Length: 248
Image (cartoon, rainbow, N blue to C red; front, side, top):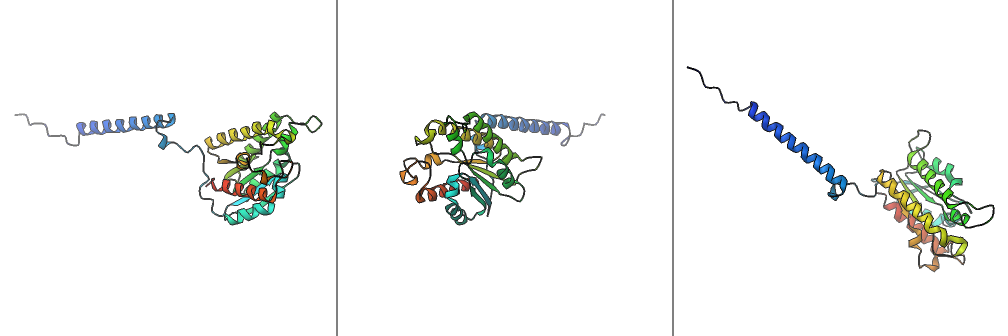
């Protein structure tokens, strides 16, 4: 008499069920990844803006032109009030982007600033509008902008930068002085476009939108519509500090 085969509770049928469950889980994960990548599952995607995390008492450098130079005291006061540590707050009259490149790179090196604020571009906009030896096409200034951002965000010579967030202050676009109304929107759009690409790449970058912040605020400007009154200096400094706060 042939004995009945024993039951296989842990045998082939159970193994088959485990394989099926594993395959279903794998397919589900693939589907979720695809949907997230296409934007269907928005909650599973990264924020459009990359974040630097808890900055704590972050070290901050601010490098710019005459607007920064006039606002040094106000910027330092705002940074102190926000719990930040100003390392460099420096502005030079008439300066353009590429001439500050070395200082910007140095400020972003290990041991330097956690947050780099670049407040340059007004003079580049001006140089795009003149018809003398100072003229510099806007295309060249945008190339300078891209080069400086790359160097600050990604490092130079294989050295990883200390900077965890880059802030760029854009320029006033509501004055007829020195061609700003013509070229400022072009420059500001280039800054905004690059910031978008940096954030998509996971390198936090913010735009301190001085163009919008100062619009319809004549009390911020002296007669030339560019340089700042005392109220304008305070507003400029406040915008910088508020924008740094969004890096967190």
